[in-house]
Image (cartoon, rainbow over the protein chains, first blue to last red):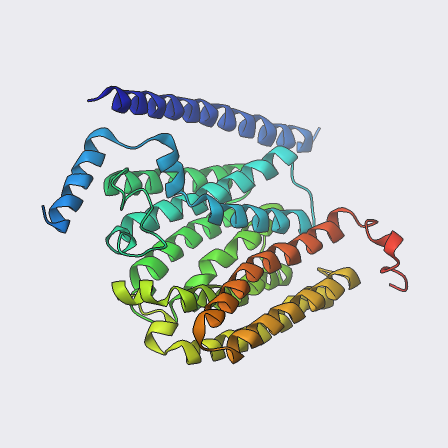
Length: 44
Length: 318
């Protein structure tokens, strides 16, 4: 594998890592917001 | 080395080393995505009801990713013909930058991701519509209609028409007449838009055996069809003003933009030979993109900024 190909692989890995991290944050945020709506709507 | 063995070698190289990040982004057809993002955003904004801004953003993101996934799956399936067409030869798979398997994997993963996230963030009807749209684009349009009938883009155009409806359903949770009208505008817009392109890219489709209307029925029949659909589009584009989705502002601008569309369609119908004929078809194609953005923009501005046009006097008497 040439140096350029190694660089490409590194960039791909970095983006995959960032996308997965964003995915975790996204799920967390969706959960909190949806949960929040239902907490407000519950009978007191 | 034969053409076939070069293709195999390129495929093998791509499988071994993979492409760069921007090659994978190209698989998602970013230009198509921009239209999907915009129309779904308008659908979401003009829908009655409220949605948490972050969830709205997630909905748009999911629809965009779903559209991108469809693009990747389309490029996976059409890899054999893309390399032979001038318009698509520079795509990552024909150039050997990304392998077919990678495109398939990316498309499947992003499809599943977008459908689940949309369901969790908004509602499962919107999610089901997105799943249906991706399925329709891949199985009905790409795998079946595209290579078997000249009506391919008429029926297949439904896939591109769903985004505003999905945006609407993400907010309301139901499919109403207004969302169907938004769907119909894009559905009727697709044939004249795509056939205008096909008129001057006819040889591309002919070479790979895709039965586009100009290839099968000829340019003259295509010109007639473009004109017919343009009239239908004109009528459909006015509908929002009569069902409460758009007001007088929308009616005025849609009539004006529609008249220009009809004028260009008429020009395409009348001028049939020479480079000028291709130039007019190209003009209609480019204008059609502006036209759709414009219609949806007016609809959006009228809803989001109700006072935006008051100073112009347009709203007097309503």
